[in-house]
Each structure stands twice: as structure tokens, then as C-alpha cells.
Image (tube, rainbow, N blue to C red; front, side, top):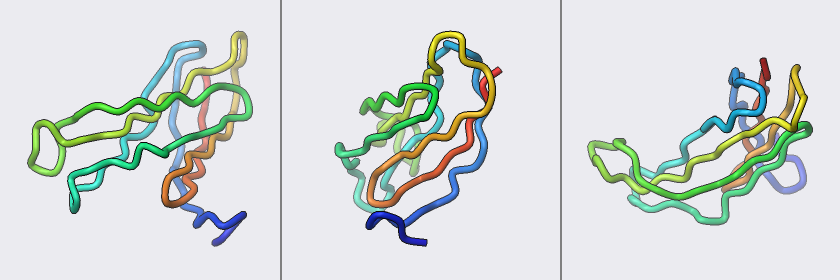
Length: 97
């Protein structure tokens, strides 16, 4: 489905501990071995931080990787929704416990 020019993908559900930053998604490109630094995200009841680094993926122990990190707002517990933007829009359900 298209929304605002983005192709929507279902990112599934992730459980996180309230107030604790957690990587909720790794974005890699095995075909080209590069990462798109324009990745960004938003959440209704928290923040999305993006950092680049490497991970062991694609038979490469130093595969370039974008880490998408979620942190809930102070005091928030419950269901949150996050959107991660890269060449598509990844919709994720986050359960903050």
C-alpha cells in the first residue's frame, strides 16, 4: 500500500523496557554492501534514533548497518506505534513494559 509516497511494510511487534533504549530494527543491504544514511523515524510516545555501524550479516562480519533505536517517553507504558522511513515506510507496533 502507498501512503504519502511511501510503500508501507509491516515491521511486526517489538517488546521494550520503559525508558531503556533498544535496537528495534537493523537495516542492511547485502546486495550492495552499503547503507542509506537518510533513514529516519517517528514514534507517538517515544523517540527514534538512528546510528550507523557494522554488524555480522551477509557473510560479512563488518557489514555496514543502520541501527534503529527506540526509547519511550519518560513514564510511558503501553502500546506505541513507530514509523521508520527508508526507501519504504516500515510500520512497527511497540509494546512498552
